[in-house]
Image 1 (cartoon, rainbow, N blue to C red):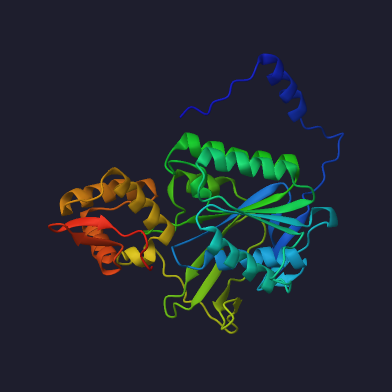
Image 2: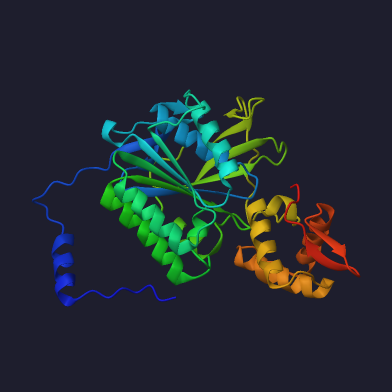
Length: 355
């Protein structure tokens, strides 16, 4: 795909003149709207990101950021201070169904101390799972430019704004859009992206671009000794670093601080690679999308043909599989009855599976 947009020499001259800095002019410091322990993680006119492995509770963590913005106060360790004319939050979810998006919306409102049985004028929630990447970008752009009083935008699933997370062209285009939107509207955008399974890097070329351009990149990890606890630290931050903190999910299905938590010290060198687990390392929306793509081509597969097809369709969802991992994946899909063997041991898809 070619995303290069030519401009005329006359337009280039205008942009050149507009871009020149002058010592005779004053340039305002970007307003600080999000902090952790006094460290700035978000300013207007910039964007940030949360990354983490599947099921590390990234969405719970971002729910706390949104709740802090809605109450203009503190939730977990996030302290928000949005200007009065920029109090509205726009939340975009690209992965989940409207039913599951509504559960996230209700959770955010409860965390902010707001009623969860009626809409809030400060929160707009968009469920964009059914659209293409081009449609999602257009919808988000229109919402950003035509929503008055907007201050914070969440994009839960930036990966779904591109077809190929390893495409330099697509990645540069969407990151350029984030920089354009935040500068034009003087808002802050926070995005969510999965990590690679074998290391701590954000997934794909788009992850590389996020690390290079984001104001802050938060790392959300499950505690190795207690999987009920998630640990939050700054993987990259332009401001002063903050003391990491942790949270767990309470009996009301809301995140709360894990008081007295002490993270395990990081060992020097490359992190050890954990054994591939297709249930933990791949999200349910990724499973469903890859399986729907595979079985849209054929209703039934023999084992080897199924393995080859799944390697291709999961790669389109950002999951790179070798033969050994594909075998583990098919075993897990059979155990969960997401696929079943019928008609002479051919494999077919059961879209009404219970995950």
